[in-house]
Image (cartoon, rainbow, N blue to C red; front, side, top):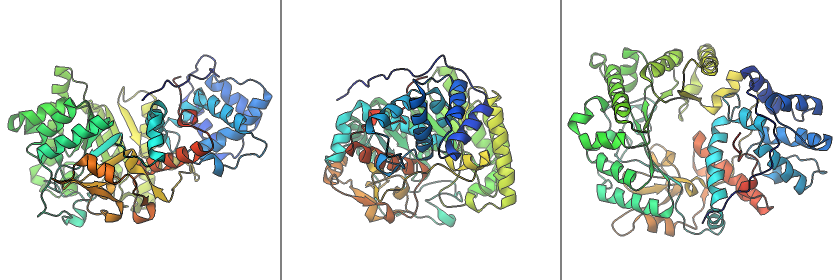
Length: 499
């Protein structure tokens, strides 16, 4: 069931492209001030081409805008709203924010510390707004299929032993080698049921190196043909020879939608040390050659596949961030993700190392704004932006008591365990407390979802939560709580309209 979203009245004049200094200054204003003086807000609105009706609306926006910017996932009931503001006035402010040039430009820019979450919110809230039945099913605990599904197709099999890998922590394997993994037929049935149930995205990640699975070409191709948007994470070590060894798998990669190579160093020896391979094997050069080949074949065949690099900052590579950006540009990739890991390697950087890191990040951001990297997108972890801006205070992301990540993006491990998210599908964090059920000969994916519809999961049972899952959980909390007071997904202020 779908419904058209009512297009709000425009509150802006002709869009004006602000400078990066204006975006940073406005982000600072929105995130660091509890209430914005009307005269200052008026000047900011003019900078971005926004308009307002009268002085009363300007005063209302001066109160509501910083609350939204500083508490993007906080339900209305928990916001410190003035008691004089009625629900109608709040909805009016929310509607204004949805079509604001200033708010969309700032909050989706790499000057706003939660910009990755805000971008994610566009898809999440958009899905709920277009399909009201989806939210009703969640509220009524009816069986439903998540919009996104992450799958781990190998049982820890990998030719690397990366320090930050959750399948080989401290170079020790954390998988169960004696258990049977799901077959090609099993995975194809999962994707068939997922697509029929409304899943739109299939993410191949975790479980080791996916491309080491000999029949992965059949699995990916089935997902491609089922109409799913297919995303693949790989260490890239097999790309160079793959077309000769397994042409079906190589074709399935080219027919996919998105592929990211984990590449955590630009130095040959450092890279070898990070993945625990002999330096004389020169594994970095092999990955780079494979990426060049894939990009060349993609371009030659006119495939829409987006290719990128994932770079996890840590002790061995904190001074190579500028170099990875340079390599990404030379290779001609579409995206570069600079991020932190989930087992606290990055957080252990010394103050001196962090100073070197953030100086590079600021320079990359500056070059990105100046067009140095062309069409390539560079994303920084949300947790990095506050320090890049030189701030102490970050916007608040709610941490509810109940985990509902699986209602939008669940995960399946190699053995058929359906978990609330991809992190607890990894053996390092796996727990029965966060398991929906198990796929087996007697119980398929659809039955697991049906049988787990009434299950509830506590966030206290998970020792870690990755940024993407934090965002989904916080957004669910806000949507469900706001819905109780009549604020539906299509009225959420973070659901921005096109500029």
